[in-house]
Image 1 (cartoon, rainbow, N blue to C red):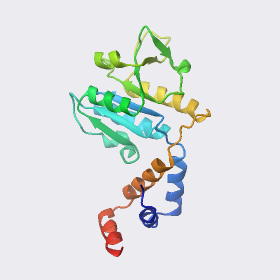
Image 2: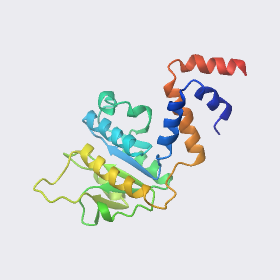
Image 3: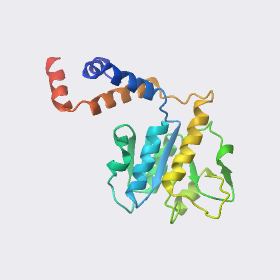
Image 4: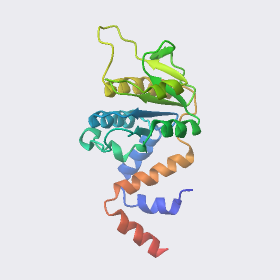
Length: 218
């Protein structure tokens, strides 16, 4: 449970415009869809996908770091790392297990004999959208455990897009359709309050001193 008195105390350090912006952005956030990226070795691609999640309203980004580095390129992310929850996994199996435990269907974004075109994808089910590298695509483990396959229709000679471009196209399409639907896609009341609290903490520079003063006065 969120301590509402604590939340009110922290938000007292924010401007009215800042608090209003938080409420407006959170009203468009969702956990109905989540994104997972598998062993992307070019960190700027990871950061760019994070930025797309933030811009279009996906709150959770899952990063599998089984082979490559663990740093987010903050310059590309443009501060998105403060507003998107990044869940890190050391193996693809642990990532899939975690997402399935949260009742997400696993959707592999890759051409496949049983694939679904983007505009035909059923948005009603909570879905984890998996992206692999442009060079190698998704691993066989993801493909074997996928509940469905999704692809972007293409009419040119080139058969693939950069992961950050693919993610942006897919996320924008699905989120636009979700916002226009009657599905209960918004954050729950508890999730909404948790993000208000987290974002307030991110916005206060001397948060440790502020927190210490709050608890000493109680």
